[in-house]
Length: 201
Image (tube, rainbow, N blue to C red; front, side, top):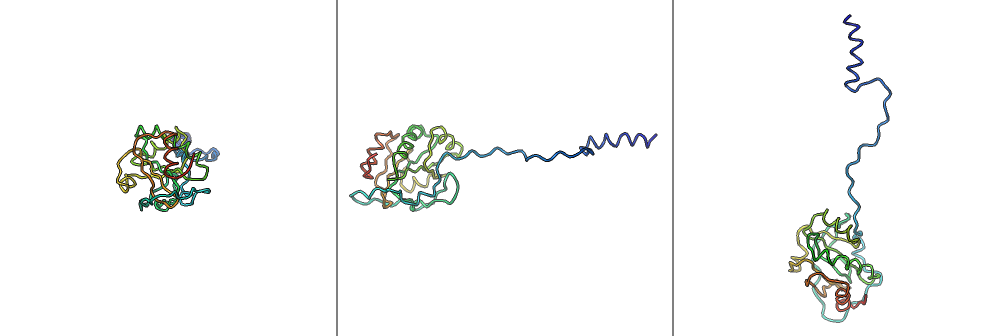
């Protein structure tokens, strides 16, 4: 009687423990963890290569060099030494929590599309969260290269504390103008580029 009861209980105990004698199902892929969304921004590697049709250095007194600091690229890869960035360039310092920054970002994207190899448009996302920057980039279709400044090293090096901040750099990597007047539109950006980089867009 006891032996017969054991024969009846063993399959039940094995089934309860998940150890059945049925054929094993092939193991499926491990459940995927939430994948990181692809970055809306371009890679930063081209930043240290002069634009294809780089505008010549405009006449006038030379400005200061770009700060000697290294920033990470939003898309990953090798960090970028800011002083190695090849101009001409328009650098936009912004953060997702800054209203004027959000207002002007589409104008910078349009400027990057009109640059036509004559200058680079570069973003420096400062004092921001990765998620906030990613969302703004996606929402506004911002695709130019983006450097990440977790603190505000770039602004401190320029002795500026404004958001947004726009820096125009000539082909020699010299700062020609720093603008902290607030949100820039297409017309104002075109005037700044023409006046300080000698390029009509």
